[in-house]
Image 1 (cartoon, helix red, strand yellow):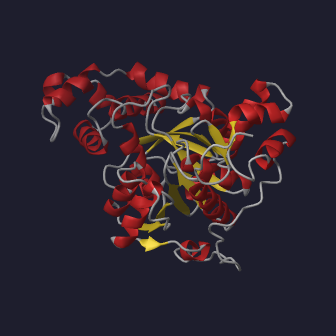
Image 2 (image 1 turned 180 degrees about the horizontal axis):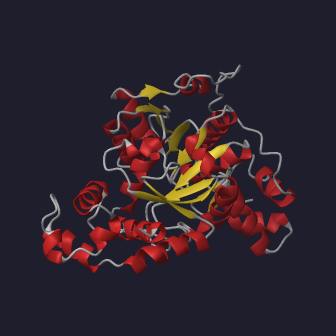
Image 3 (image 1 turned 30 degrees about the horizontal axis):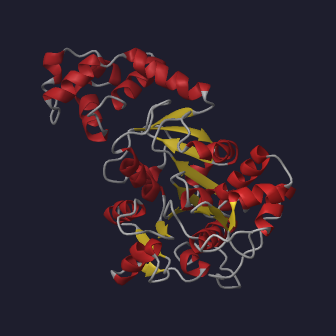
Length: 374
């Protein structure tokens, strides 16, 4: 048997709509190989247990070339394809309900063997949430944990960047294929993750996010991690979907308590009320892992965090301009003494790092307040 063709046939079957890990295993068992299943007549496909007529039709229309192209596309991006049968495939994802039959990865594959914590939260987070996220994700990464999150704007991006700032390990789970940056504002983060962390997805290279993509992504986020930490989550937040997948997988869930009057803390406070373990200091999280050094000082929630030492001068200037309260974007551009394009690029970089956020036309480094005219 040509191993390259067998591998491409497996990829073609795994990417066929309606064929998950269970049906793929049934096909391999019935025909002895992926190539055998891919070339089987439609009438024979109908004899495979659990394979519906629609799924059998999809398999009959799948081609070896589709698998060849997907593997080549991943390699062109600088990535690779991991099959569930490969030694490097993460064992944790073999054990979850609805396991992925394959993964497309780009970056440091060694991170798949590190003890991991999932850090998730609101896309529309508060400054409190961003501050706590940086402290938890950065501290956990410095202690040796791999930070897993979903590459979304808001706290996902803040968690990844905090891990990178701490020179630690981080894995970004995509709801789309390699080569697609979503949201577009995360392109700098995407490139840093590919270079210094790991990007992982079960979607084919170039595939755009579609209906149901992010809930499927979320099961991989919790599946890779021993503990899922929720920083902030409004009622109905997507972060709560990750909580559901973590519980279904038998994983521990921790939540950061928040202001009871804050919409972004409704979900986390309810989780604690319903039995989730509150995360009050970094040691609470590290206690779930053996062999990690507990920090000497407790997590300083709600206190100012010094800006990262590697901030470029323009970003530092803009951040310092926000220390006394919100400032309009136009005023920040004027204060910068640089072109609008340069100032806006610096503000975007600060937002990506979770150091500032936009609120009603203002940039803020603290909780949402009325925009001040300066």
